[in-house]
Length: 452
Image 1 (cartoon, rainbow, N blue to C red):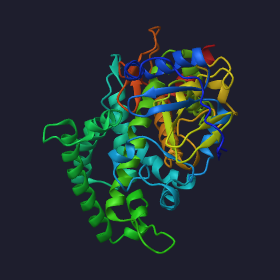
Image 2 (cartoon, rainbow, N blue to C red):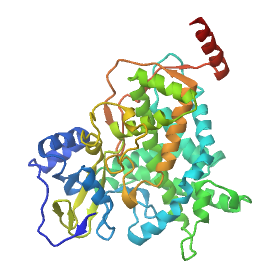
Image 3 (cartoon, rainbow, N blue to C red):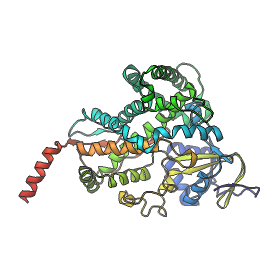
Image 4 (tube, rainbow, N blue to C red):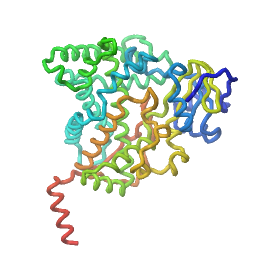
């Protein structure tokens, strides 16, 4: 792990390009910009970025592990998401306060509890796909967004009825606008009036807070409150070691954090999965056969490989509280260290033939958690990782049971930045045909076998 030191500062090679040009390159295309610098300087280098200032970029698994295991007395989370999500978000908390909050957030997302949410995911997939057109190309990203949004509103917010409908309309534009503004300079996140970009986010947030306050009041009045297992109820019942509860304002911030961190990223990964599978017909056939047999090994490996080859979050960052040693480098105080997820995932040393889309690399071989980091790592690893993985597994399994996906020789879709997340530029286009009911499939298979 990284450790405090008084040794002289020693930074990786610095990119000798004006700060403005570096910033422009990262705004236009972060992945290509980072890859170009890495080809010249290797897996560690120093940049000077408009928002972060001087920043060390790392991607080697050993250094990623060192950073993620460094004491929170020496490093803190960097970035603006805490400002966007609110002071009660885990993205805003540090040290003891963060550890205590995280301890309360883990139980709602414990592995065994995931099974109670699976039927919700299946319901939402079936509801959304009931109107999918057959034989016509259409973008699936919006559908994936609706599936994950509705699922998280039911499983996490405990929302239903009027509150469910209002949140479903309010949250997508609020999260999208906030995520785009989160990667811009601080001046972009000031309220300059009702029609300013951040002013609109603030108005939506005010309405969101009012809806959540109503849901909290409804939950506490619910005669079955003690038996409810939605995350809202679990957070309201949670207690710190001193017996105190999370304040209502902080509950609202945490619910928004879970939504922002899980809804769009999970939906975008699902869209990328559709985009990838259409271009790999043999894999698609194998997955369909596996799902029909009630197995999930290849399905899970495919999700891992999509997250590796098409990471929707490109980087995660920390800021030093004091001078630290990280591998051979000595990083000064108040210096940003960026873990480049896209570079880590594209490393041939960690993933032989990394440019190839090959889920078989993960069959029976789960990824190393410091080379494969879609959920971040250390004490900041996404608390909803198990929920997101379950949601993707159930969604994809249901889609493969219900539909036959048309394949294509078209080039892969370009990467498109939505602010925080990177999505398929065309929205993950698909052509589908409904599969016959399972009983009908079995009869057809038997006839084919007899004919053969």
